[in-house]
Image (tube, rainbow, N blue to C red; front, top):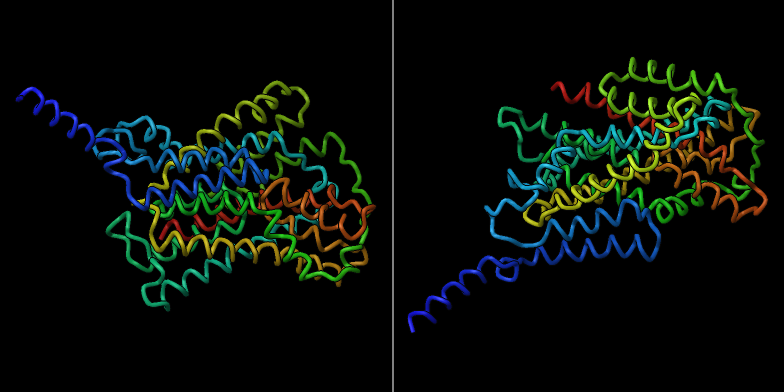
Length: 405
């Protein structure tokens, strides 16, 4: 009898270690969120290369377990924690930018330099949202969870609020790696919510942008045709990443790692003698880093750390920031038309966010709906790649101004 009693105790002890005994409603909610992300990626084809790893990572991160087994992403010594090191230390974002640079064609921007203004205008979403978070944190009772819990006890609440505001605002750039890069330095407590929010809105570009674009433009404006941009010379394509890196880093030294890797990847592509390196950077290299980044970012959304008032606020403010960025690009294109004889189709202003090349494709899609013979894709790529540079510069400026406080 004692034998069976001992067996019973061992079985009961094991049951206490299983996920069935430790699962919470928070875990269930987050697992359903992970399923939803994968559903969007697989059935709707919304950025599957991002949402499948993130969605599966959310499921992985919310598998319940007893603390101390060294298997969770926040437990020192676990394999997931070692992989997550690349996120919390900002290692993965520059590596992603290397691959992006090797994939990006800056020809449209080189041929029409004025389009860089549209990429700059779209960054207004970042700074308007920054002000919004500060207002929420100071005026709303409880501040919707802002300011964040201090990572450093000596940092005063006003500084913590400003750092949180900058980290949330960067979502408006629609650039997941840049959002991760900045939030790891300014608001690590909000990293999971900011990363998931940024990548979510990148994936939902085809859903969010078209209504804003149609609302802010007339049919006559949407029918504007732009001549094909001239083709830059080989020398221009080589000089652009070198000169562009120098100028941008002089403006925003804090973005050195992002911009250096972005332009380095591009010069590998354009110089004509390192095609093997460029091909590696834009294919297996970026794919590998994307898998690690997506899976670990998703796994970082454990219910006990993710389901907080800040997360809800971040998702709402992220949508607001992205909407303002889209609207700013469109409205600035309309302003440029008032000051210039060479008319710009305002739809390409929405491509000033950093979601390459989806935002440019959406500009073409909306223009095509009005006129099947109107092709603005190449022109839209100008502000689109300018948005990649602009969001990195904005992050560097915020890091320099806010990070030193």
